[in-house]
Image (cartoon, rainbow, N blue to C red; front, side, top):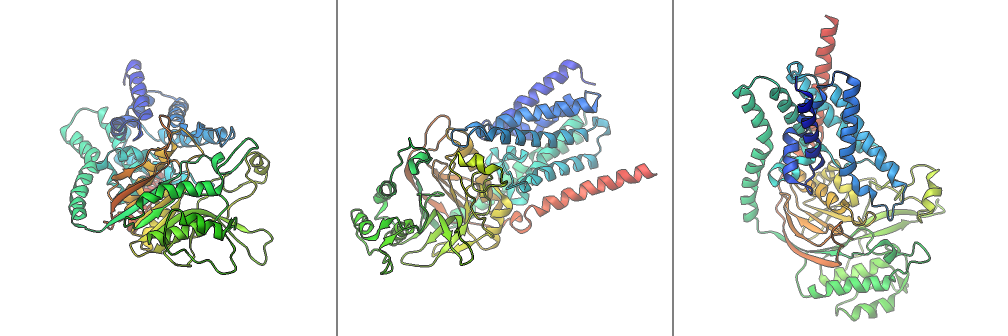
Length: 545
């Protein structure tokens, strides 16, 4: 049995490896975490004879790590102090799952292969279950450690992020088991093969598809608009706020787009809730808007219906689609009135506007942020009134794919793109380009924009299609179907503020079929349930013998 000093060294080593095991913190620590970070902890924890002591150690160890990984929650300028109970609850929830898992880990000699597979399965199922509480929480699965390198990320195309979590735990448990047993070459050869498998697959996957991508001549010319406006610059939340008028906000947007007026463009993408006051709320006089646009461009204006003396934000966006002769994707609130409802139904929506078209192509956000976009409990309303939130959005009901001249677009809004099973629905409906509109401004000068981007880029590899993102304060970028970032604007983080601008990039339209597209999370869920039930059945049969 390891000495107390050895156990303490293993515990501290595991803590600092896992603490830094985020792709934006340290790719090296992420690689180590995927191989031995958890193994070192199990080695230290199993030196404790009491199950209660092991449980509490695992709970505290994992809780502190999650506090650092999810520290972006503490950027409370806009969300207020009420975010802290949510932050602590999530850290505790994840820690309880890990502490329960630790109870099933035994001494190395008693740890059978089936038990190892059952523990890995329990962990994959635990992380997957997080997607179905309230709106779901998809951030920070343990498999994220494998995505710190381009090679490791390619395994997403097989089984998605929860399959990577399964593999991370499998590798660590094998290292833990055999590091405590007499050395045998064949054992460690098998462990090395398991540890290297994602990277070996990734190398082969990249080599095959890079050659095909180079031969694929179809590229998209894309403009990604980043407005870099804080909430108080858009709308007055307090009497002290002095927001830009909607006219000034559109003036800023038009000024950024003007340099690209003579260039062939396939798509123009704007962020979530680009400008205030929705899509069709008629706050502008049409004639004034037409004169305003004429100062920037000379082109056939979109002709509003004769009786429409006043127009909304969609009128501006439609004219941009006309002038650039391209598809414009823009995030705007939208309202629907019905004969039976006194108040309108409000959606957080994205519109796909084609040149000189009145077709209403609208996607409604399906995953709403609790407290921010919908009010889960009546008692929350008094709290939210302090932040100007009076009512909930209506949730969208389905994935929607929109056909354009250049590609079929699968739309997502904000952190919907962090849910692999939702983005897979877009792929199954025929999307060959993923489009995300985001506004991460609510957690300023934090890691959130980059963490969100890290999760979003995984969807490209899972589905085998490229992704474009337009975000108010970042990360605005284009990502090819192998998970490589093609272009990126400066984004809001602890070291810098985002800059308003337009990212003009050429993005390969190359896409390919993946195993994850066909089976989704069901592949790893089936495997995990199989091993869990097999272990339970065999254990029960031994108890009854």
